[in-house]
Every structure is written in C-alpha cells, then in structure tokens.
Image (cartoon, rainbow, N blue to C red; front, side, top):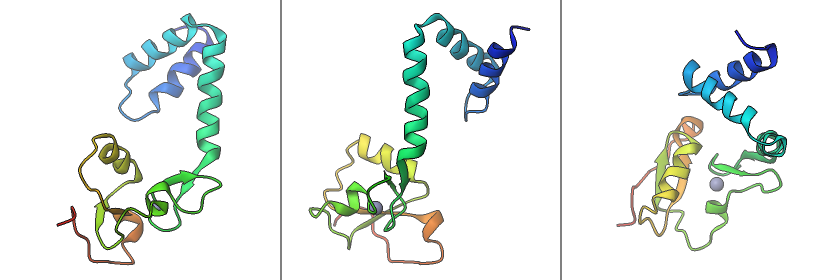
Length: 125
Ligand SMILES: [Zn+2]
C-alpha cells in the first residue's frame, strides 16, 4: 500500500479500458519517475481533448469543438454516395491510420445511425 496520491493515480489508470492493476501500477510509477512538466503535459492534453472534441453533426465521427462537421465530411474529394459503416468513431482512426484505399468514402457510425438506415457500400467499386 503506497501513499494515497499514488493509489489514486493507480486507480485512475486502472479505470482505462484494457489496463489491469499491474499495468496501472507501472504507468503510475512511470509518471512519478518523469519530470513534473511531463505530467502537466499529459494532464493538460487529457483535458484539452475532452473539452476540444465533439461528434460530427453529419456522421458522428470525432471533430474539433469549433467544427460542426468532421474532416472527412468536409473533404470534397470524398464521394458521399460511398459509405463505410463503422460501429464507433474510434474505428475511423484505425481505418485512416492503415490508409485503407478508400479514396472516396464517407463514414457512418452505426450505433448513432440506427434510427436512420442508409444504403452502405464498402470501398468505391
Ligand atoms: Zn463527419
């Protein structure tokens, strides 16, 4: 049993998905070993992401707080007739990071669009 602030930090990390108690302890100890400035950057980045991100009004992907529509919906090179359906907005990050060759696709988060069914096509064939 460590000091209460350490236990609080471990508990906070342990609430994250996929982080067990051992990993939470490792992360907490890592934070304690690093300079205070790094902890501030991490804390400020968490709050900035929480405050600065919202869901796109068109497709429910993530977008900046000041943008009504996400970068995909604003991208005029994409063909909105060709839709890639994903369950979560986080799935879009994976697709984009892997550069899946959908040169024209919009995105639709199935969970949010359940009440508004659309014809959905994967790829652009
Ligand atoms: Zn969008």
